[in-house]
Image 1 (cartoon, rainbow, N blue to C red):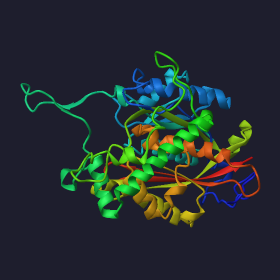
Image 2 (tube, one colour; image 1 turned 45 degrees about the vertical axis):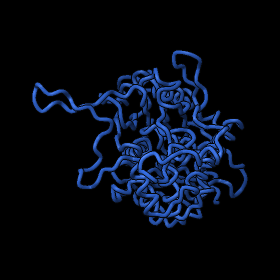
Image 3 (spheres, rainbow, N blue to C red; image 1 turned 90 degrees about the vertical axis):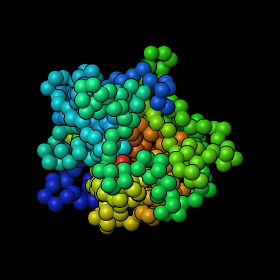
Length: 410
């Protein structure tokens, strides 16, 4: 690890060519709601109602006035349209002068919204951006194609088409089986990975490691203050009893797959110079990002392609990365991606991941970044302790996004 006490130069980090180092994008605050099972404790809240309190709390925590915000960039995958970011921003009390924009890269939406906001800041100067992702799967609208004639009933569908049919466009579970078969990921490895995710998440919840990053949410009943997914009673024996869920005689089961969840997560992005002016004590410096495409039949491996390209561009080895957050949609694709990048799965998702917490589609990429900031802050503040962090997520349609950060203490 390398320490960066005050500046990019001191941290051994260079700003992109032509970019003023003082305008390097940094994340100074991050927050999320609890991640709860779809149809569960957050089922009464629409997406904008999940996101608005997160945005409001971020401004209150940092002391930033709403009128200082340059833009609100929010990822969302299954909402009803209508510019959710604008809706949530106004609901949060931001003035009408602050615009909003929605990013839809399916599961990558939240991470890509953060990436886009960072690039907007780098291109436009010294602003302040709110960025993240949200999903209310519980309240997502029904979707249908109109009948071909006025007499025909609409054709309802459960998910959008991600690629033309000649490219396969498999359902997510089938794609996970494809990855397990192609990369030789056994049922035993998948179950062990899933069990570890739950065990780590339970331990983190009980130790209070999630407390500082979670905003309790009022949802029409008792306030929801913690994730509801991690299962203390889960065991290897229980996992072995799950049958194949998607392909006969397959290895991907409900036990080693994530569950759908409702959640929102967002961050505050500004320049290094503005961060100092605001008096913050630390930040995640956004070093760079990459998005890559892969065979849609093996869509779960997309994150590996993006991460490999990103690490190569930054002349960084996988073993140099200290903190890794990967969206565990399925144990099979998580293991395959981490193996391909050269990251020991034991080193990823130190407090569990989506297999235990759940997958809130458009929110999940932003949750990864929120987790990285919380984990970096937990590293002792001693010489050589400021970590390099990597967030990566695979995306429907055969894509993946990865983002590289450096934690910096001021």
